Image (tube, rainbow, N blue to C red; front, side):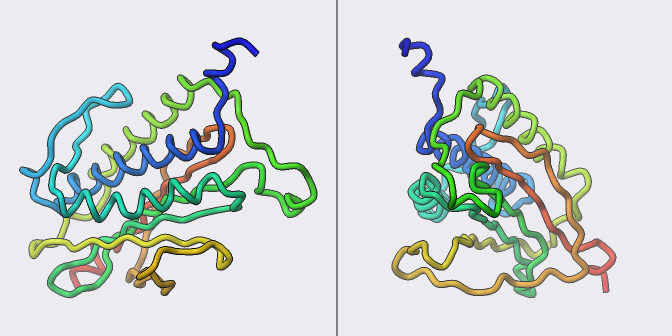
Length: 214
């Protein structure tokens, strides 16, 4: 195989790195756009051919990195699907008002008979095409602020959760529990993208404006 050919081969590990990088930028953008963290904590960077906002607050970065490090470890495993949740809560009431779900599916394990064949562990999908697909999804995140409810005046708290199969170990101190319900939920699905090994679908569930005014 030529050197250029090797560079275009995507492995499960490099696919995981691409997905985690996307989730990192996506979650930072949500925290910025939804006024979860003070905007003075963010700096502007250029990535995916567009300006993005990234937190420089140590506490925020540490909370986020703990989850993303775990995701990068388990994504290369042969797991059919993994869900990562960012839940926003009204600080005054403690009730969940918005949830961003990042659903990762191993494309080779999507069918019911995936245990009966040799797993696919590499992809030759053009990296430039993957980056363009991610850019289009990031543009939708940026535009989503126009159709989501105005954040509550008393501020927002945020939590993160990960949903993996029972047989996948989770870090010490983590535990499995149901997600907080969102009253009168509405959903907005963003454009999915694929690395040729994993597909990632981003969905935001939010409490409809009328319900919050009751």
